[in-house]
Length: 238
Image (cartoon, rainbow, N blue to C red; front, side, top):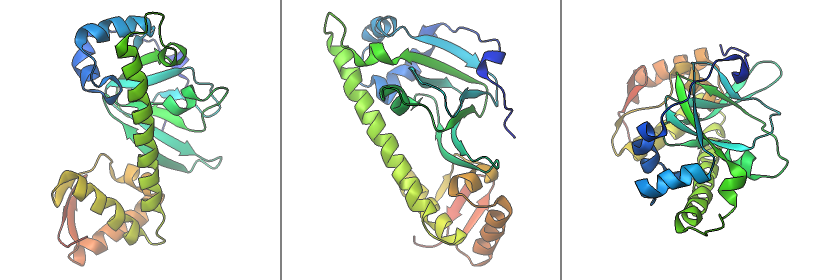
């Protein structure tokens, strides 16, 4: 269960930014930016890095967002939880990926989701006002990152659309077939590993864990797939 604690309750440590240049260079947000440009850009964007333990809320529902978070190490879950404690996992943010960008870029908007560290996690925070404002020198790399940000937001919208397709079917089997079929296509193989454990998969597909496990057992008996923890092998065409 996630600990209901604010990130302000934890001691945060600064990292040396250059240690994470390889992650940043591979990030969609900094695509096409050289290391020299990246060094200058991080200064321009008032970038800062911080480390968080596991199960820490990086963002709460109702928070005003002024910074874009980019995971440098570890991972975080984007979670929507109702007043009864039922939670849905919307997505998982891995190294090089961002979170809260849409909220940060929308003036006066507040978050309607939680962002929770799944493991000990290092995060780069970028000032959104500096990110969206072209600097006085009108440097080409700053314009490039704005274009990259638009692309990043578009991909996140597509990911949420895919999730709605997976949670749309009425039966658990149909939801599993939809999700696992997509994972197999993305992996280019019938054997693949998903980024969720069993509870997280249940939360992502918006079903009960016991019902999910029961359905997976039935699907194995029916010869549709084999699975062990987060590893799956599809035995039929999807």
